[in-house]
Length: 324
Figure (cartoon, rainbow, N blue to C red):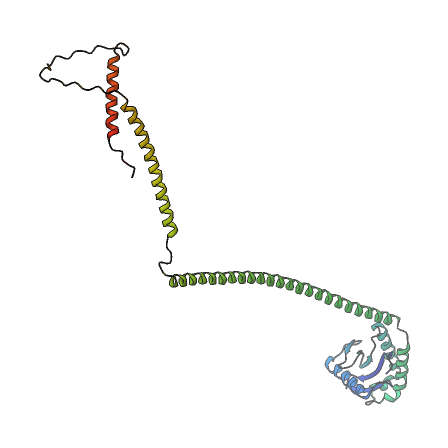
């Protein structure tokens, strides 16, 4: 089948009794395709009847490329299998010429049996197909190119949309990975700190246990009288000796001062007290003592000095008490 072939089948059916008057295929059509196209043509006629005059429409063909064009002219239906997507205006013009060419056979079309016109119409139908396939369809070519451009643009848009979607997915994935990395880092930091504190607690507990154990061992093994305060006793004795020496020196100094005072006192003349005659003592009324000037009565001053000397002598004769 040529790649540029547009029309591969022309069929003619009388609608009054569904008789196929002609069924012409191109030389490139396959046997399986011929049977499928004929069945599709008759099936459409059964489904769409009754038809209005000048009815025309195109239908897709299952499992085959192209479309089946149908046009009704009075009591006759023309069917064409068109491929390679020519323009519809170009196709309908071809069908109109086909109907005009077929009408030239006159009234015989109303009474002929099945496929009676097939031999008669086979050659002109194939010539018309060859002309239709070889004619340049400017509009169809433009439409084909436009459709190709549209298809390419649609594919490009799909690619762009897919790339945008993939870019968004990559951005979301990168964001998720970034969040996951931050979360992992925070958890790792928290776990590290927790591990450090647990290590410190364990070491501290071990140190306390070791110290307590050593204390218990030392307390259990060392005797209670292992410590003799010899140095303390010696220090106390030295302190007492020093205090005693200081006290002795102070006592000697005091004794020497007292001795010197005694010597000075012994040199003071002591007047003997005259005996007092109690009988001769007569109570007399007290008289006011006249104020005597020390300068006028030197004897009284000497008596006072002698009294003070006697008191000092008594004090010196008393035993001197040591501080200890």
